[in-house]
Image 1 (tube, helix red, strand yellow):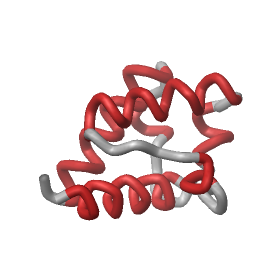
Image 2 (spheres, rainbow, N blue to C red):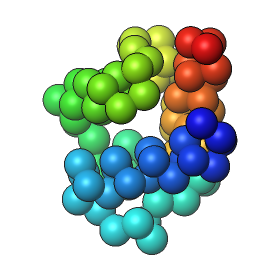
Image 3 (cartoon, rainbow, N blue to C red):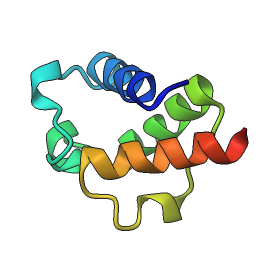
Length: 83
């Protein structure tokens, strides 16, 4: 899966699961604030990513993750590592 396809699929998931407008997603925006994430939302996000991409996110993956771009980069690296 190409980088663009990964990002596009992630955005589709975020729009559907967190009921936000696609226009609110931008690489430089804060992930937690934009999605209004709480601890249960993070658990949901981990499950969603695992079921859609076959990669497991752990607590350390979220350390330092602030923007959507940070999120995309972590997912992309995990997918690449699983190949």
